[in-house]
Length: 379
Ligand code: MRU
Image (tube, rainbow, N blue to C red; front, side):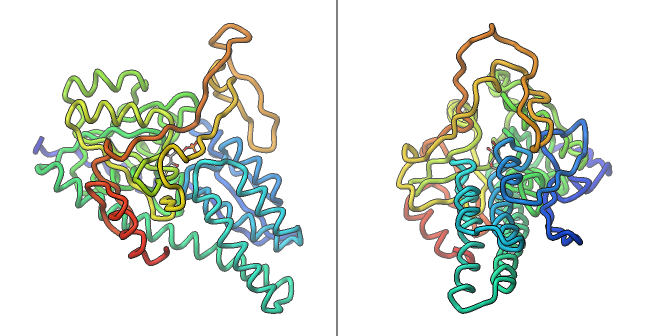
């Protein structure tokens, strides 16, 4: 700790193109996604011209991560409105595409409410569609701003928790520019530490079964010049035992009112390890991920995904969101049953701090969380 660490000049942008963008084309508006099922091997964009294509992209994880799902959901409503499809039906299909990340329903709700308000006010269809698009753009802009505020708050918190710099941070899943209009949540904090010359190493859990860590976080880390190492999820224990982890930084898909955190499966074991080894376990998420209507962690619906993602190596499990899901390389006997929850829930007592754009809650209490959400500009 306290040494000088190399800050590579390699790459400043985490992505070659935005993770998502709205484009007006001659044939009508489209939503263009950087297809996350193809990374890091191929940087391919996926063009969604209608809501069913976007729903498929969400289900296959071509577009993924809580904040980006919120943005995608909002633009999805705008797409339906602009192309004259039923907004109510579109909103229901989009919000139901994945159940755990509360941001998805949040983004859909905001754009749909803007559309309905305009219709109630007597707006012509094209003006109601414009209202939905304006709201989607606002959701997008707010996320960009939230991302940079979380990075600031998170960097300051790391400075308090780990005086002396030289942080060795363990992260799970992917929480960077691929999940956000900005630089992300937890990975944005790690990137801020890197730019400040305070990141000694980013430990990247591969994140079975769909490898968001190995494929996506490592991709962003390499582009931005962070010193990073990928490990299998099961290697985290020995890494802690060797004293190689100073802090865990993860994102969240939903935070219940009691501070319980749903995030990518494998997060809860890291929280247990962190507590045992006296290492801070920090969650970074916008207030749009906090769901005060979900009373406690056990109320969070955890998405169960198909077993073949576990029993087959899933590289190429989907060739783009428009394609049929196809099998990968079998790694278990044919017919093996699989347990494949996409997320797990970490109880609040294992969480050191929750960082949002509105500030930091630590220790985690219902009142502290509710108060922070009420002071957020966007709650
Ligand atoms: O199934 P995914 O890839 O959408 O899961 C994403 C995660 O679990 C992220 O950690 C979470 O959305 C937080 S990103 C801000």
